[in-house]
Amino acid sequence: MDNYWTAHIILGQFYVGGDQGKYNGQYSQAVLLAQRTGFHFQPIKNWMNGPLYYKGYYHLFYQYDPYAAVWGNIVWGHAVSTDMIHWRYLEEALVGSEWYDIYGCWSGSATLLDDGTPVILYTGWSNASAVIQSQTQNMAFPANASDPLLLKWVKSAHNPIATAPPGYNSSFFRDPTTGWQGPDGEWRILVGSNMGTGGNIGTALVYKSKDFQTWSFEHPLHEVPGTGMWECPDFYPVALSGSKLGLDTSVLGASQKHVLKISSNNLRHDYYSVGTYYFNNQTYEPDIKQLDTAIGLRYDYGNYYASKTFFDQHKGRRILLGWVNESDTAQEDIAKGWSSIQAIPRQIWLDSVTPTALLQLPIEEVKNLRSTKYEQTNVTLNPGSVFPAQGVQGVQLDIELTFALPDVPQNSTTEEFLGEEGPLECSKIGAGTKGAKYGPFGILVLATEDLQEQTAFFFYFTYSQKSGWLTLLCNDRSKSSVASNLDKSSYGTYLRVYPNDKSLVLRILVDHSVVETFGQWGRLAITSRVYPQYAIGNSAKVFLFNNGTEDVKARSLKIWSINTVNLTNF
Image (tube, rainbow, N blue to C red; front, side):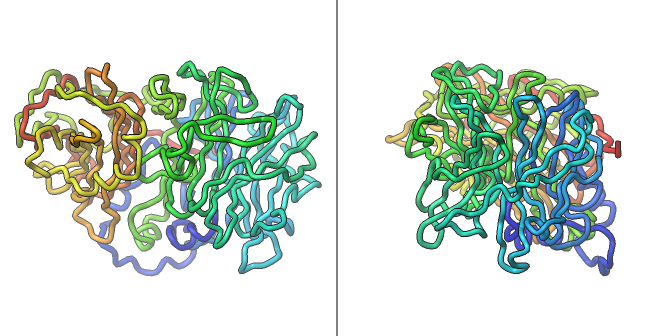
């Protein structure tokens, strides 16, 4: 991930020590403390690359600046866990120390070699210029491969293993992927880049190696005009059967598809497509050209970026981890002393009904944090009504909500659902919008008793002669806080609702200042940052609502309080 975005968009998110100056912001200290999450991973302080499972531990490597409130000293933080929920901090894994990474160790990935040895690949900012980025690709090995904690890493004598090829800008050349091994026995990786006039063509460059030591440039795997720099590429196989079981990154066969994912430096979203990897000429083509990488589908239609998957060989699944930045100001982040979090790890697999799209849900381990349960069934919501979840309060919740599906025919054509019109449509509709037949109806979380503050997630049905009935899933943050100077824009898009579906289903994780929502068993995800001033602690309530002109029925509402995870040093 590049430093330009870090420095200019999330300025002030990496603070440790020094003179903060007097905080004259809009929050009390109690409110600032209430914004820190209770069961998501985040560093003890400051801001928060390549995950893997090794000798009984899940390893999380993450970009981290331990020194300053502005971008400048990016290192690789390191944490381990046995369940991807309870993390323990270790010492930093990589620090800029050589000419090829002296100005920072940026995003990368981890690969397990044939003998099981883990290898880190990462981008370094070299000493060619302290002003103009000169990005190199580098490698590190564990100092002691028998150490399950992988505490010490040694940089390769072959570094840099790759520099920008002729015709490419070394300032836009970063984020190597996990390696995969082809039928020819050679290893390959991708590096994100751009090309063309003004760098407007996004691309992922293929590098190959016989021994995972010395690497040579082949050519672009895929490119899409008009999409700009591709950051944090990811490339992996998924089973055509729709099985939730994941595949090792090197698997290649007729019973699978490949996913090409990138993080758009222009649009700040993570895009993917599903298609075919042509090994013989090292190219990739999406199955639906209109849904090509960087212009079609997104992992998440909220605040979610720089994501990375890995194959969890321990449980045979593919895991997605993503970064969630802040939506408040630098002043508040400095006052808090920390900024940004990791989303809850998600299991990801191919949708067997629409095999050009993915499904994703929180890993099952999250359910082990559940404690007190509330349950309500068969609640009829009349037009204009609000239904309180009596006795439910708090800011750490796991919610499962099922509505009866209104009696309208559903259009499940992928192309109709997933253009960029969806987010635009959600921005035009608020939770309080009235007059439509079906919707908005849904749920309010982190809400005060008087609803002065509320974060809404709702369904809204639209109809046109061209498309028939379509279903929007939206997140309205306009009343999420009485505070100003926040990003309160709406999130969401069209939801895949199939003709055989009988219900509308939401899974929602609430954790202080972040809400992760999953619609229709993982067909759509929305991650949202919110900063209530009053809906904190036990003042945060939950309500169902219906502002459509027809009754809707909530068949089931289940809410569990979630235990706090104490993140500690190992």
